Length: 134
View 1 (cartoon, rainbow, N blue to C red):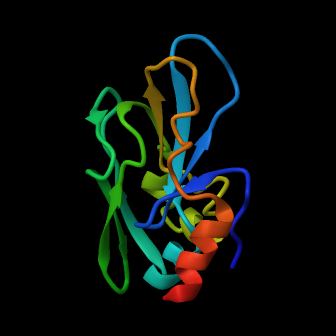
View 2: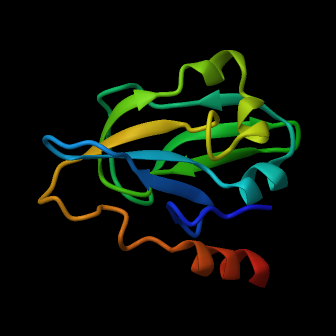
């Protein structure tokens, strides 16, 4: 399983990637990790928040349902949902095939002072150590 080092991770197995760009507030793309999708198995349904929903770190923002179970997805940062991956409505299995690319879930706009809003999350090495520890 892969753990790309171009993003940050939560202990609940979400990834967060600061998107390029500028302007007011940073945009963070969020998804679930390769480890999470593998543990869930075949994903058959995704429930995502509406654009404009305010989110707080550690609070549920949606659900991913597989043939095995249903798991909450948690916000890694505080902000407002700016976009949801509508393609997952018709093809939730995309998360299984490409969890770090086309299988992204939401984008969150984070107001702030220009600092990286993901800096307090786990880096790839720390996340991989968490996964390896079981």
